[in-house]
Image (cartoon, rainbow, N blue to C red; front, side, top):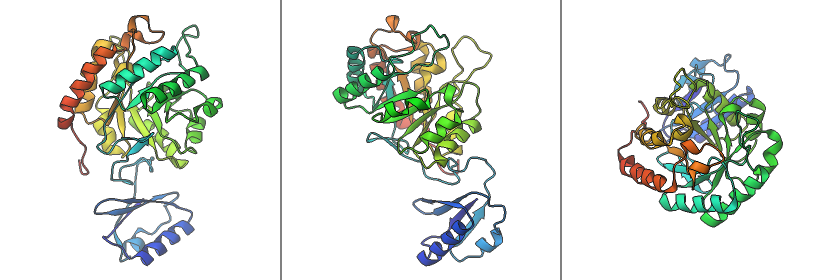
Length: 339
């Protein structure tokens, strides 16, 4: 349920309303926009008398929210959320390119890529330390050593870092990581999501291989219900009958998620297609669709990459892509309240 207040509500009446609602066991989330203030009620609202609240002088309207996700719902929070990743803003008109190798391989590699992508315009460095692989015999990442190398690359380049967590037991290794990524396979690992909800750290939440947008938002709700509001949604392709590409990149998810939720939305065309030749057109299309950012895999030698070289851009190709993005960004679709 949301309560839409009139302009400049009487402070004492507002405080009395909030205290009364809290006494009923409800959580109250305040959202202040340029012209409106909204109280979002989380909990059992079935016994609340809407007519009674509507009759209050400071109340403009009361609406019940039918969707099961509350904290992530744009109706609760009409203004775009801006997430700060190590001081770099994402969402609410702040577009970012997240770039780096699928996997951290050695010190010189990650440092060189970090400096190169920053020079090209990336704002956040990505790199896999723990790698979920379909085959148990494939390269699984450098694990703790990989995180150390990412932190070294952060010092050299100045870029904040994002890397994927695989298990709760690894959480202590992520204390200096600026944004923690939850991969597609862990999107519904609810115990992990609940624990990340207790952190004061941005979380990049990837859509599962066969999950709906509502299921993605419900996973975000698990994190936000714990108190962590710094969630970024990521469309990375879903599994369909099509086998020409690694996944089917669902770009319709961008405007849909922007209308359903206030959280930033980024697109990963590297995993979404699995083919380096498709990364640029799909990244440009994601920008045009209104994404708040794109996540691009970049490697210094894709032909010899230990992981996903076929979908990685060379540093030169990434520079060209970043230039193209800057060219179309002013003309990109932007979600507006009421769309």
